[in-house]
Length: 182
Image (cartoon, rainbow, N blue to C red; front, side, top):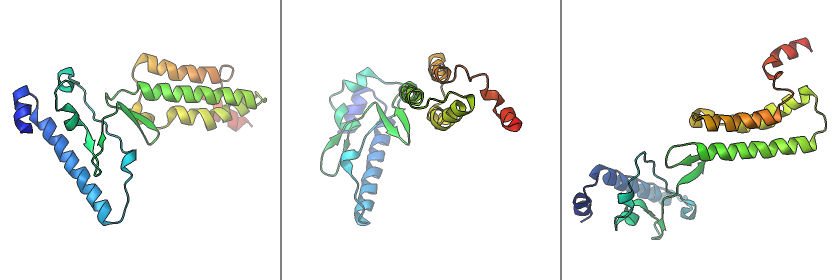
């Protein structure tokens, strides 16, 4: 019945079949966890699908909700979300990193403000150490995955760096030489 609905709308049958195979595998994982006395907290599940070409027509179909949602073993439906946090990175269904970059720049800016309000010593050694220990890890964590490519994203990250290190920015490339002198 579902196959005839898909064909009558002229949609890609492989996309829907791959979705159903994924659901089948997820149910197998759930069954395996049950057999091995492991509890999965289905209330914490989130569904997200990656797609480069989103069709507005697809979302208007009457059976879209039952195809795109994940049904838990209790019969509850989990509907897709636009982005999810995973290992410190914000993944979006469109594949862009703008949400993640906005999140990390805000976090790094707030932490920079905290550093300036708590630490009174503004010597270059202290400020560079604080930058390297607190701010830079936030800005660079998992950067190979979300690698900013848009000019605005790069400027947002550089603005945080510039705000934290205005008098010391010229010294950051010289850190190895400073260490050898001291």
